[in-house]
Amino acid sequence: MKSSIIKLLLLSATSLLFACSAPIKQVIVSPEINVGSSDAFQQKQVQLRFSDLRRSNHVVQILRAGEATQLYSPQQRIVDIVSTTLTPALIANGLQIQPLAVNQVDVIIDNALVSVQQQLLKYSASNQMSFRVVVNNGKNTLTKTFKITGTSNGPLKADLAVLERDFNQQLTKLLSQIVQSEELQQFIQ
Image 1: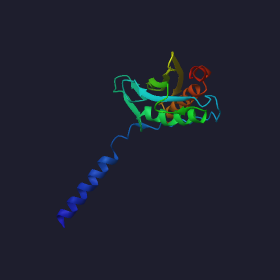
Image 2: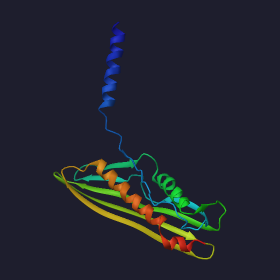
Image 3: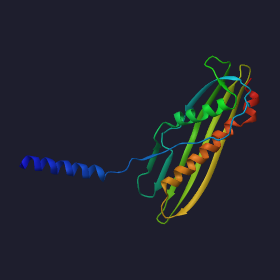
């Protein structure tokens, strides 16, 4: 009887300890491209590859003077999110993905970060995204950089849900720019 009460108390204390631990520091990255379907790429065939050259995995960082930086990573690798979002949008616009195609398209993530400066009664956030698309059509190479930046300010504490929403909106815009780029459409043969 006594041992079962002790076990119950230990189990309760452990549960309480885990319930009070820090929340999981992740954000949901889920861009939604709505560029419709077209034949903009005219059924051209490409090898499509994705890479992430960022030094760390987090997409949101909150900086406070005298405290450790809070880092928030996506639930899934951002390169996988970009691949699973961009590939169907390109296919819907007439691009054919073939492993042995002459055209090679590399989508490179150079930067994707929301950086927040948190002060006592206000915050300022700066958003930066930079992707490179390198296209080799068998004769020439084109490197095109797509960038989006933004800033926001607010009273009190930065709301992670708002930062997450802004990040997703900017990522959607950037990916849409890639799909709709006439320069890429014309360069791919």
